[in-house]
Image 1 (cartoon, rainbow, N blue to C red):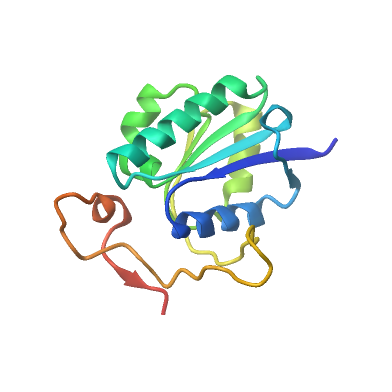
Image 2 (image 1 turned 90 degrees about the horizontal axis):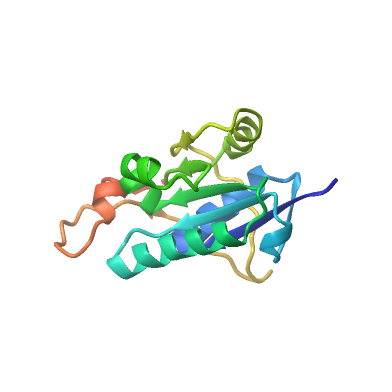
Amino acid sequence: MDKKLYLVSLGCTKNLIDSEVMLSRLKEYTISDDIEDADLIIVNTCGFIESAKQESLNTLFELDDMRKEESVLVMAGCLSERYKEELQKELIEIDIFTGVGDYDIIEKLVAEKRSQFSNKVFLASDANDRIITGSSYHAYIKLSEGCNQACSFCAIPSFKGKLYSRT
């Protein structure tokens, strides 16, 4: 039986790149546009501003209501990274919580979840393979991560950390 994956990437283009990296780790899955057929559902969340946080949570709740019972629901990205401990306690609907960064063991986490049915936290590590989901003639390149500014309205430094360059 062909395993199917449904992906929603919210927020910035860096999240899109992280989503594409996750897809490259899940090559045994076929990308599906139909949530009801998906065996694995990944929502790469944004935690930048309040409206983005709310959109991320609303998307997770909506997809949870629509998914088939045996599917695995993954909350990835910035919102999960920043509030992972609180979210794990509150969001019993979520099967796997992952943080920001590379997703080189996502396949292993999904397999563990399927066999053990226990919540796992997946944090960032280093990888650079990805599957481009946009047009064939351009792609985004992530040159840096984090931020050294301390803007009062922005939460990025608190969960992405200090600025570091790809080079």
